[in-house]
Amino acid sequence: MSDEQEILFEQKNQLGVITLNRPKALNALTHEMALALTAKLNEWAEDDSIKAVLIKGTGEKAFCAGGDVVKLYNEGKAGGDYPYKFYHDEYVGNATVKHFPKPYVAFIDGIVMGGGVGVSVHGSHRVATEKTMFAMPETGIGLFPDVGGTYFLPRCPGELGMYLGLTGARLKGADVVYAGVASHYIQSQDLDGIENALSSMTFSADPHGDIDQMLDVYAAPMDGISTKEIQASIDKHFAFDSVDEILESLDGDDSEWAEKTAKGLRSKSPTSMKVSCQQLRLGATKSFDDCMKQEWRMVNRIIQGVDFYEGVRALLIDKDQNPTWNPATLDEVSQSDVDAYFAPLEDGDLDI
Image 1: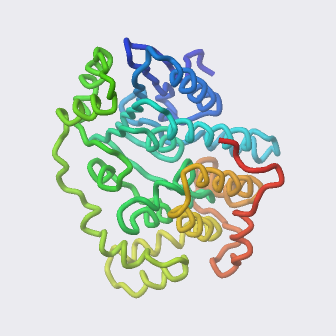
Image 2 (image 1 turned 90 degrees about the horizontal axis):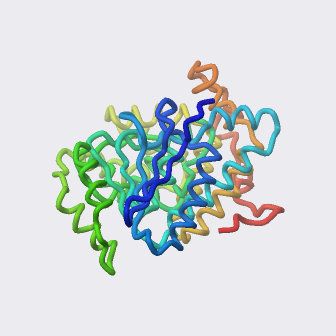
């Protein structure tokens, strides 16, 4: 274990700067990082000398490629309570970002998945670049699109959120802004200049407006948004309320995209797909806090199940890319099985 700190905090005049500092692990979020982030945000929310916050990642490849699922796998298989603590504190952190009362600027430069989305997408200003690669690939590891995915995915254009949540499809660059995951599109080479401008800025009584104005100056043209080309197909096939109907619709389309999409869905955890589909439909009408409470109920059942451990094993431990899901088919996952993931917990809901 390196002595290097995993997350760094610095005050630059009126700007609080957070740096995710695990470049060799693509800045993957650990439990300790989640706890430290929440504590510092709570402190800065009350600190009148801090007018805005910036979060970024170290290295050239990633902002944050997710949570540290290998540790979750090892600890969960050993029967410890670490997974419960991690997800509880991660979700509290997501809510802290959402409710942060000051501008929260995220430089989503590079890979952003899972836990990295949770510490960026809920902020007021989310900056994508030509290097941004976004995905919520959780159904491929027996999980569900969490970290507030229940809230933000149903609010993407049309059925794009259901498509992203079930397939784990990747979005790049300007497509991330089109989806609503990012709010601004700027060239990666300009980020240092923006940070310098933010750190030297004397904010007015409207700091959100100050940052909007400055980011508009650096705005890059959003050319070649590929998602627009398939939006109509996504809306057609992913408008249904069940995975079976979505697959039936895709199977009736002889396009290469539909065939590839259906094949990809059939490789995911059947339980995860059914649970995620219901999750996202319910999330469309829930408040953010109620979405996070729902996710806490769901992840408790995931930790107690089998597919998450099998999915992580196949992808990241043995790396055979050949998970054996249980149940193995959609038909074997009953509605009562799905509903159990959403049932109230004996210990009560997430306190946020």
